Image (tube, rainbow, N blue to C red; front, side, top):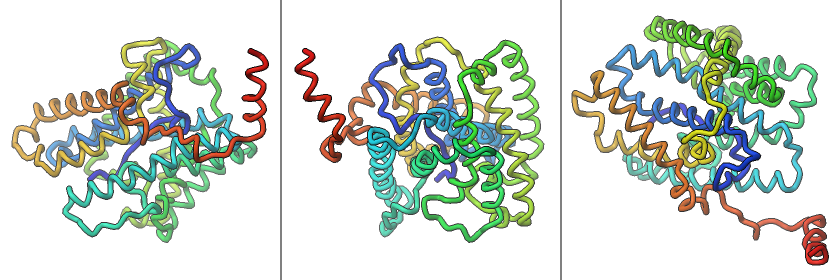
Length: 365
């Protein structure tokens, strides 16, 4: 089972059934492209031992796709002030799916991994669910980070210090919460003009050599370093490095990831395309594709020899991209919205403003 995964930027808000004029197609396109990379990365994982090229591609993708998700998550958290309606969406859009899928993945893992006694633990996120827990924590702290004068350096310092401490437990995957925090804070501080800047023609052209250099470095580094650095789930000592290595690797990887995220976003189309509507359903693709990834290992889909070759890598890539695309489609979203994006109006009290608004509505009519 994969140890690293990803998710979607504005998951605290229920996705709309269709792309409206108010939505920026650029971000929906970016989310769709990123969720495809998430699924493809998981599909490549069983192929890494047999191919240095696949391993290098895997390392390159993991260097930027989670940071990209988290940066956009922060960007869509800029207005979070813990108002009643925002807290409701936080519960229905993150907390409820976390509980549902943490439970579902535990039962599924009992079957696929042959662990019938595996406990359900809502404090120890399993597989994909860590990002929901992390985003819940990050968004709650968003008002604080927006008010700090040196928010990004402070957040980076927190991430660096986290790598020094192997004693940080697994509760809510706190290592990941702290080590990925700087990317969320960067997103909080970004403005629309920053995204327009990375979409300029000059940046788009520069993105090509950036990725070429990135792939070359990944190919060189693949046998020389562990990919665990990109998961951000362990301290430096747990990765077999001296404690001080985290103080160096964290800022270096932070800068490299930001450059790769900018190069990735430079090639995201800003107009509405066939995949724009799919970008509004990336939460579904994120949460559901993990079942397919786990089932692939359980049923031995990677066992045939040809799957471990170049043709197999191409087929696996195409299948993963197709599966996650289908899982983002409107029919899937309509079928599973009750558990992924529940309304749950019965759970919350109506505040005075809502009651006054409803009483005033008939009079205006």
